[in-house]
Length: 318
Image 1 (cartoon, one colour):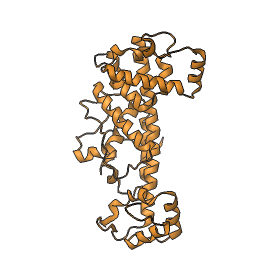
Image 2 (cartoon, rainbow, N blue to C red):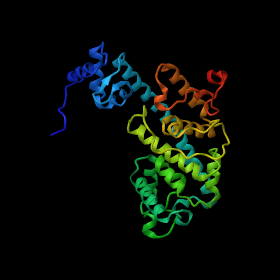
Image 3 (spheres, rainbow, N blue to C red):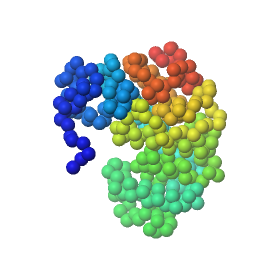
Image 4 (cartoon, rainbow, N blue to C red):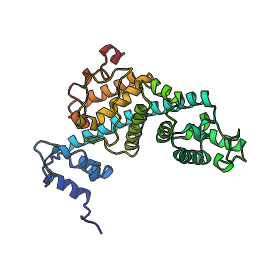
């Protein structure tokens, strides 16, 4: 049983036409509705309707306009996912380096270095379980060389049977790395050092930004929509910046849109030397889709003039 009857693809096309959408190529519409569901595409045509109660389209909208928005959103997410990979790798490297240099390779086992001991235990168990079942070559090789290894919580002490941080943290996801960083004791200089290397003054700022980017990563990983979306997990406001940022505060509405989160991602990419590459990709994408209403993802009318986005033509081309 269901609340509404299931419609065939042909009925879906007819329904869209009845609601005012212009469909010149019925075969094209049928093909798209067969590979991308009606309900998923629905998120891209909300702004095209002049009557949301009866779901009627305003005059002049074509089916191809919906597909253009969908394709833009897909390409943007691919670009952002690659940028998130850059931040994830940099975060892992900085976390391992600064903590291991001061507290040794088994620092991740020490609950006294954590702000919340219970959360530390939860994160540790999850990390150890992931390492125990990982199919990565380095993890399998480590387990082969240490067949009698027990988890530290079972023994109650540390030993050289435990993998060092630079080994075990390779299986940690972005979200887990973000939580591990946030749960490091706030008094540890290493925590502040990591934040400063990302261009932020305070560790709580970096924690907030990492949480927001982990949220963005989940949206992308689940192939969800960024177009016309309000962002639930937003980066905290930053007090002072070491790198170009916005030249004026954004409104609450502007901070809810993906553009603000994308700008935060760009800021962190700048800190690790990959910002120019990300700018080039986004500039090129927006140029190809320049007729789209970019305010639907929060891009400001004068977005290129803000310091964080400003780039000379010379740098863009070369």
